[in-house]
Image 1 (cartoon, rainbow, N blue to C red):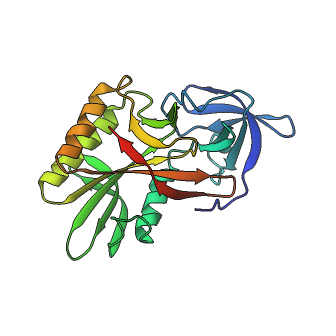
Image 2 (tube, one colour; image 1 turned 60 degrees about the horizontal axis):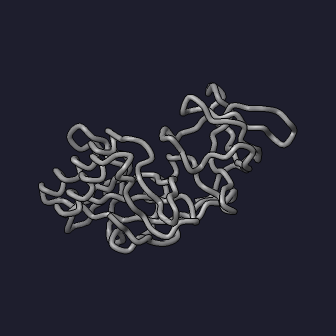
Amino acid sequence: MYFSQELVPGKLVRRYKRFFADVELENGDIVVAHCTNSGTMKTCLEENAPVYLSPATDPKRKTRFTWEMIFINNAWVGINTMIPNLLVYEAIVNKEIEGLDNFSMVKREVTFEDSRIDVYAENNVEKCFVEVKNVSMKVEEGALFPDAVTSRGLKHLHTLMRIKKQGMRAVMVYVVQRTDVSFFGLAVDIDPAYAEALKEAMINGVEVFAIQAVVSPIGIYLNKLLEIRV
């Protein structure tokens, strides 16, 4: 995935109220950027670290920019939680993920019962629902999820289990938007209920993929599967 517009460089001043970040541009101006990540972002915040913003295309939007990435540990870390959904959708359409590469029809944002699932795919043999989560937290060599208690994420796991029980494929994809980690795991100390639910989901046939993405100011692409330790 390439960015459709040239990104704007700057330095992080602060992130506050979850959805806002003050960024100093190269000309010294301080602008407010929208932060799509509602988590704590506890291992991807560093004052004065280089960042990139994308300009808003909607003239009516209150914030002129969206925060896309930050440079930490000598590499870019993706901040925009909307990106993974698009990456996985495009990869399934283009048959780039082994195991999810045999579908003739792929759609985004499909409702199942009282949940909205990120991707739906089917062929003449099977129907498949795919939920996507962004992972940005690093603990030692692992990318851990979640970085805050997630009742919405827990709901999605239970929905996937119900989908599986009805005879359809249910898939959970974690997109790790950083390259300074070597495996995916669960932040049990942060959200033990989510950790237990994922283990239960896997036992009951929900498939789990952890995919590392390479992030750069030019674009972001899915690179490789990571080992899953749960």
